[in-house]
Length: 316
Image 1 (cartoon, one colour):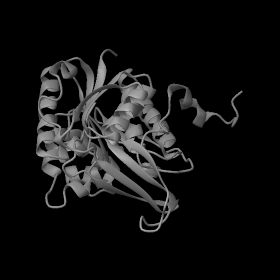
Image 2 (cartoon, rainbow, N blue to C red):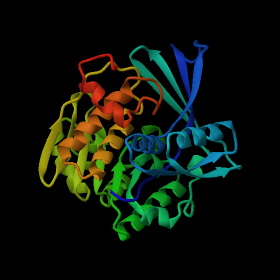
Image 3 (cartoon, one colour):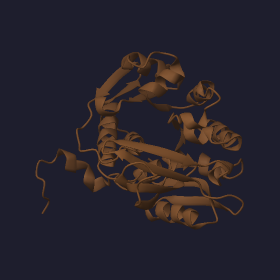
């Protein structure tokens, strides 16, 4: 493996309630950061893969927090500080011990103003892989154009592209994103999707995972990965489906687990591992991310990987 993995998109401030209940009733919250693209970059960095994240933040405290958190995890941050717009905010509330509701306040945010020219062409051409998400393609017309231009340059430069659909219905209340998702998938070497996302992209029912994987692979340029949460995952490559069971862990917060899964898969893929090994590391990484609060804080480092396979609860 040579070169870095390039990610880009919006990372926001995160307010997370520390009590169960409605926002109208709770009084405590913690402050953090999170965003799908930077989460993947952090997950890769923790697994020993050089990663670069590009994004916009506001000239405010949350923006400084975003840059500090991502840089602090070893990611090469190439940020634009935008004094004309605030850093976006998401709020996570634990309505019950088993349910989380996430609200986004991102209209007119600095991150949504990502524009052509924000990403240096050499960052794309010199990458070992470019990773894009449906979120970045959905937050604004200018960000969508960045996604298209970066993918086009990557394809021309022979750089593989991975695409995580990561559909956010709140960004598409009045429109249908399936055509855009199919356009991006058609240029991607690896496509990641949950069952409902794969159904949205392919038009197939979400309950036949093997058919979804086959159709998703046909929609892209080779590899398709269907994320099924507690039901495990499936990869479709070279006409062959490969399945992996989930790992049962105590779930504290599943937000960010999909990003950890992607980071685990890509780190193994870039080392030349086979599909079974890629799925296994993805599953371990996703399981780790479920066992703590926050978007990225519980993602595993290299030395953590064996912990879920070790029967000894104490390391001496």
